[in-house]
Image 1 (cartoon, rainbow, N blue to C red):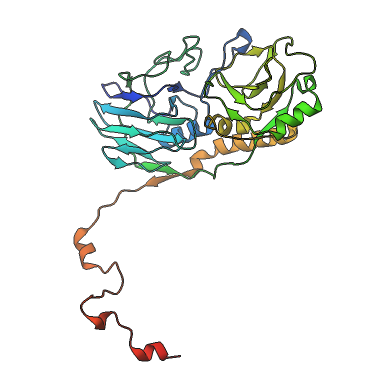
Image 2 (cartoon, rainbow, N blue to C red; image 1 turned 90 degrees about the vertical axis):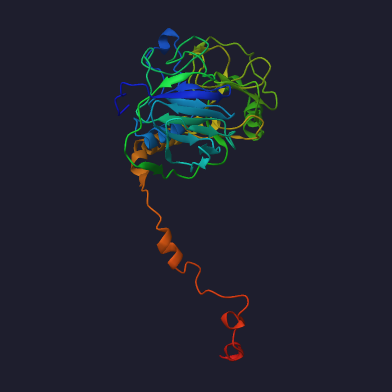
Length: 357
């Protein structure tokens, strides 16, 4: 985080929040060999965009908000926030907040967020971050193992986050690239040889939907049954975000941010890292397809994604405030030539104008 937390009583109080909402950052790395999962934000680009707007380091901790609405109240001082990710309505004290901008919640005011529209997760970054102690180098919450800070569990109404008071800097906006559309790209393997050509073709040619029973550990897919060639058990080996395991029932599971570090089901393919956040944002019940690309193409997309993250600060701009001069506005003709409904001379077109060449 770029701004040191100020000592004082500035707090962000959670008035209401839905399930699947927790503190997440860039992830917890360096201990997967001990079975410690990385966790971290489901959509790293959205996390980075929110932090960039808030003036924080790109992968600093933020509040990952699930599909349902939420409300946050500032106490003890003003709090600057920024929201990115799944589109949703946002208002502060009845004033609408534009997307891809920062905004300040005055002391006593409430930020109200609506349901996610066309996505699953949004990220609320707070200027200067919030107080807490990283666990194994990260604030990211993994509720299953009781890790995370400032609460090692999903957030709930009544929680209070100690935060930095808002600075006097102008509000910011960010110009994000158009969202990528089309199939979710995958690299086949590492155990695609455990499936016949027909099974791989079925996997790639079918429509899939994410089950409502999915969570941050894994997205269960609903679609055709994918059959194994040699059974569904293999010697357990390492997994990564986006590994697509096929268990005994033939219904694939895509491993997500809270995945286990190893698994014993064959992995037919892996969602490429550049598409992982886009895949995480697919709402449950929405149809989508997969597309296989080469390892070289996947690596090229990973480099493009890394470059996009690196250059996010270059996409920032300031939102300058201005004072509206009402007297000048009243004296100005902002509508063009004025007409009177009771004076035909102001709006009728002379006959010679109509016939003039």
